[in-house]
Image (cartoon, rainbow, N blue to C red; front, side, top):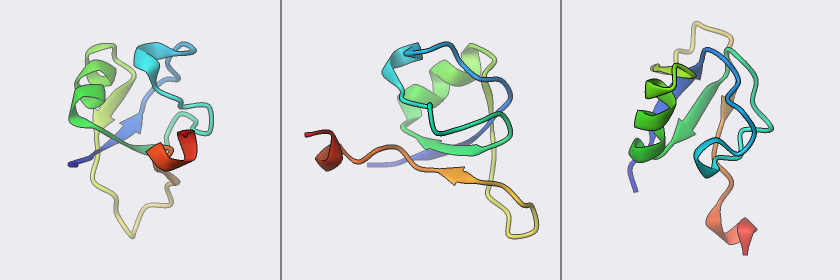
Length: 69
């Protein structure tokens, strides 16, 4: 599966699009599916980002499907 890196520009409402972003905060880089990326960008909650070793950013990965079972 392919994932997209986004930088959160504002915290989405609880349960937005079924994403669990409870561990993330504004400014974090989150790693989401392309479908979720389109929705977060459309809602104005995120912009596309490339992780950089020169910027001090937290990267939050989505929970694994195995952990959800």
